[in-house]
Image 1 (cartoon, one colour):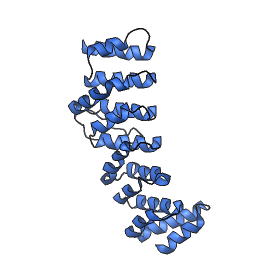
Image 2 (cartoon, one colour):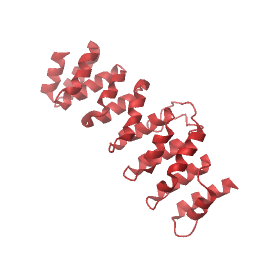
Image 3 (cartoon, helix red, strand yellow):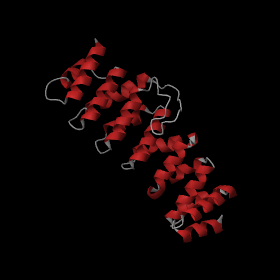
Image 4 (cartoon, one colour):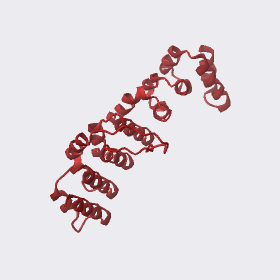
Amino acid sequence: AGALLELLRENADRDVFLRHAGVSGLAGAGDIEALVNARKDASVSVRLAAVLALRRLYRPELALYLDDEPVALEAARAIHDMPVPEAFPALAARLEAPEGEPGLLLRAVNAAARLGRSDELARTAAEAGRPVDVRRAALKALAESAAPPGRDRVLGLWRPSPPGDPAKAREALSSVLEACLKPGPEALQGEALKAAALLGAGDTATFRRMARAGFPSSVRAEALRGLAVRK
């Protein structure tokens, strides 16, 4: 594997066909120790090639690259998209990091949902610094915990997952609902109300407040739907 890594280091991703050949060689050699040790290499090209080779081998050692920002998204894609379930806990744990690309975080939300980590999903939904799409995805995952969709939310592939614990999801959402309803993107407020209505989180007073004049029409509509469900 050493000669292949040196070739990839010298190529520095200039020739994509040569990179493809190098990755194929690394995967074929199957030297897991070398691929793991490559994470210490100063060359991003070498580390990326190691991730791509581990992806082909469906190896849980991909989790070791999730904290390497230049290749973290590629590692997340490998873990989530292949998939490599053994590395899902590490991928879900990326929700605890202060930053991350949306593509990585959306996959981390999916991993957390499959693992039934309602508290992590709720914290993500409540964090104002997160991308709105990621926060909405966390709310959807909580809302659908009792009956997850058969189709993967990121890839659109048919990947059914077992149902989670709606009581745990309800408790988690209840603890952050007010944070999700603070003035901000109306799409997020609407998603939070929809999730609360499905899970039975929050109280009637909250829905009545959000249904009043002054809130965006889409938010008021979700609040009214929630009130109708409670009646």
